[in-house]
Amino acid sequence: MLDLLIHNATLPDGRTGMSVTVQDGRITQVEPGLMAPAHSVVDAQGQLLSPPFVDAHFHMDATLSYGLPRVNQSGTLLEGIALWGELKPHLTQEALVERALAYCDWAVAKGLLAVRSHVDVCDPRLLAVEALLEVKRRVAPYLDLQLVAFPQDGVLRDPQAMDKLQRALAMGVDVVGGIPHFERTMADGALSVKLLCELAAAQGKLVDMHCDESDDPMSRHIETLAFETQRLGLHGRVTGSHCTSMHSMDNYYVSKLLPLIAEAGVSIVSNPLINITLQGRSDSYPKRRGMTRVPELLAAGVNVAFGHDCVMDPWYSLGSGDMLEVASMGLHVAQMTSQSAMRQCFDAVTTNAARILHLDGYGLEVGCHADLVLLQAGDPIEALRLRATRLMVWRRGQLVAQTPAAVTQLQIAGRPTSTNLRHFGH
Ligand code: FE2
Image 1 (spheres, rainbow, N blue to C red):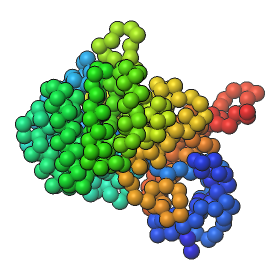
Image 2: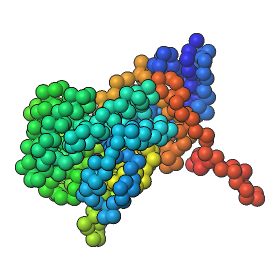
Image 3: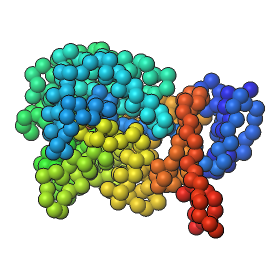
Image 4: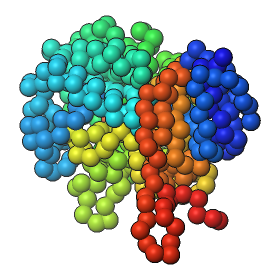
């Protein structure tokens, strides 16, 4: 007997009336109209069954610390970094673990089952590294947590940072991070990219750098990152995160830059909620949006994901682990309103992000992990429009979260008695 049968599901690619069977944590069949005995049988009622959401860029060491020790008055990236510096000496491992576990609960509730989190390695105690490695171990049964060694204070600007970063990698952190735009000079920024890529190549690690998170059109470290990726043969293993300066770059320069990024196989992560909030702060009007050129990158053949980046921390006071909110903001800011572009926005928080994390067994194919989300929506576009309720979330075929359908009881004479905002006849 099967462990799980989900039938009458709509898949993200548009197939309807589909059945998905699960045995021993893996998808065993994806066929139309299949019925078979199973320990658990779920009628999807034509709703969308998707692989889980994946967040390709987050900071789990800072999450849920909003207001500690104070709030960010200017709303800028730089005050956020200073505020984090004030908080760091007061962090305890217990508090870090508790906040991160609470966030992972939120994530699972929202069908978010894989997160790449940067972890600050510029603390001699490496407290956050120890805490998040512990969290990674504890959440492993229900969430994939991938960690990036992130030198928040600059790997060259902080003279001990390279040593601490290498200690973090030795402790089990998965990915090499960086922050070239925060180094003291453009030359140091470029040197930091070179050194960190060489380190990753030597140790067989993936790379994910915060890259050009500013409105300065001359911040061009993504170019160096793509060049170093090619030079060291790291194709498909490197990600540039944020890349907000590209919003303000000269169009001719970008016409050369995009093919370089594509040829190098460098992925880009845009963080729409945070970029639209932190960038453009020194502008009057017109005020720049500060989000990288997502549709143009996609058109050039670059793999692009949307990340959440922050939830209730020194940089951002809102958020709930909802990747549909992230994708919806990206859709609006980038004006990705065509049918195909809206579907690309859904991909940016599912399949594209999974590719960045090199997630093993992700997807809706036979043989993939049975990690699934049933949404109260008919298709990915409706899921985005409604930030659809995650009715059921499975990890390796086991139900890990369930949320009642959102249905409003109407009390209006002459009108239907309920509405769920879905399926207005076209
Ligand atoms: Fe970030």
